[in-house]
Length: 336
Image 1 (tube, helix red, strand yellow):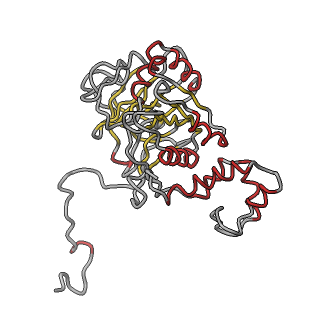
Image 2 (image 1 turned 45 degrees about the horizontal axis):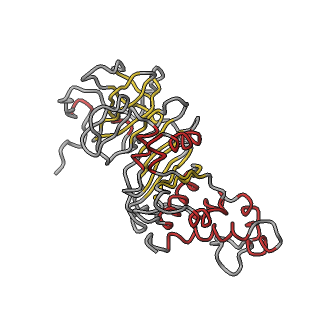
Image 3 (image 1 turned 180 degrees about the horizontal axis):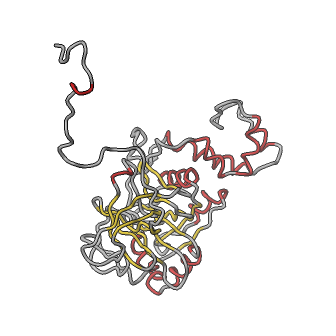
């Protein structure tokens, strides 16, 4: 039905008032040039604990960030109450560009990737040599995620008093991954923690591992005043209280410069988000040999140029075997 006549003017048009009395929406976002810089230490149900200079500040994400979420390790810009006093709340208005990301999916059929940690330099893959038995497929998957996300891997083998590390060292020797072997006795007297700490100096290191491998025990040995427990809440700086193992937590190292990010124990490590073409970047001795590969080469097919590259002596055959084993890990279950 026609609402106005043929010859209407602007005086005939009714304008509805803004009942809320607020400003109209705009796509122009404030720059917040005076925002303070901080680091996300942990995330719990929409509340983010951040370190701003030497103060621990509780914050929430600004609505203007939309669906973009901040994770542990993120460098962020904050405004509002930055005093860190009880019952105060700041606002995260910007998430800075990330230098690296550790991502995983629930399984290989899950299209939704989850960023576990941001801006870590190193991924410490913790595995027990016995009780529970090592899971090479899970280690392989963690290595692929590290290479894809721009993190350098570190292999930490625990419980060497129950089994020797020889088989694992032989399996990953061609990858030239730094490693540390520890025992329960050495963790108790501090010797093993000192050796691991040497590998963490000046770096942000994320720790990942299957439940029961001794990952949190190792973190407690590295950061003794940050004793973590299995349930409840923990203060990210003092370590007092109890902490749920469902979220990652960034902890500053003692005695040396560096950070440890403890993550919950994992049962699986999905790689649905991984682009296999990026994994080759972690093998510089093989990457040059891919120039003669056919387009979209999987590096595990008859026409792959890497076979000839290795045959000519440009790289160790064991390196090519390791690359192909990692690239094929998505097609194998972690228990294989």
